Image (tube, rainbow, N blue to C red; front, side, top):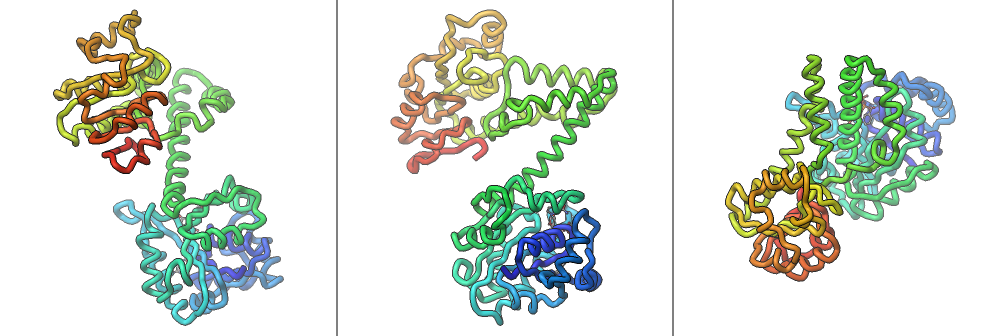
Length: 438
Ligand SMILES: NC(=O)c1ccc[n+]([C@@H]2O[C@H](COP(=O)([O-])OP(=O)(O)OC[C@H]3O[C@@H](n4cnc5c(N)ncnc54)[C@H](O)[C@@H]3O)[C@@H](O)[C@H]2O)c1
């Protein structure tokens, strides 16, 4: 393919040489004439392993060149990739100045160009930008019609400086955020030969993936460092602890606990977090991230309460009470805390949890629930129909297939607050449905 790459910085220069090496014809575009001259002289505009030698070799074959003339580059190519910087503005929002300038440049050039052109945004932009900002701006500037003679996609870049070429050729996945089959076809052709799954999704999901990934990487580093400092103060080699920690691919390094849903609870997680915080305090060590995890969790419970209370005071059927399905352990269950909050605010409540029977509760579990929810046994029912009887709001903490079928059959005129993520209830079109994170 013939590709113009706007912005020959770290992302653009790496993508440029790698795409050229894959056999594409690349025209780099940059407002900085020094970068353009360097590229045309067969030199790399950035310091990055593997780029300089590729630039030299590919320049000799003519498969890559550079220009400051945006119109010439657009006219000579079928696809334009945008990889200009989007640095933080004073309010923390990404600056759109360079992106907007490129949109105008490409738009102007397209006014004089017939046929279909594709624009692939690679700069990191906030979710929604491609559809609500780039697409209308480019359509207005170019006179082309998105979906007809203009394809606009978002394709996030995940390369890491220092191993960028390796990352380009061996990414974990290629994310294609497009709104049409023609858009997906462009990205499939562009990356043909890269051994990684190409995942088709919407531009918004693709845009959000970049932020979510980087936020997660930052959280992982902060977590390891906070844990490291705390363990060091105890004379423990944190590298050994974390090395072994990472060997658990079932719960630690895995998709476990990464599904948006309701708050955590139970007899261990909150207790262990409190202990670690307390231990850190006693050693005068600051662990700001660990210290705020319980706050974040409480905020999530409050979020569920607000979703319910927005519907007005009424009778609520709560499905699920234990901290997770299949156990009767109520200790520090977020659903118990939610129930307590609702009762405190005057909501009438009926509770169904297949695994919880008042008669069988004992020990610290029994003491806990009697302390948190007085007359708890009067609220709990083992009968789904009775739980639903008179309830205007149905809250799904966790529910099995039978309960979901019963709720589905009796959903008319009710609100469903879903903390579990039951797609078949979300798909009902005649119900007031709200999910906690979706
Ligand atoms: N650097 C990374 O590791 C990395 C990784 C993934 C994604 N990203 C994202 O990719 C984007 C680019 O990052 P970068 O680090 O390559 O930026 P960079 O600052 O290194 O490069 C941007 C280039 O764009 C050029 N430019 C500015 N305005 C222009 C215009 N109107 N027309 C043509 N060129 C113009 C600049 O001269 C510069 O060479 C950012 O949104 C960034 O968040 C960066």
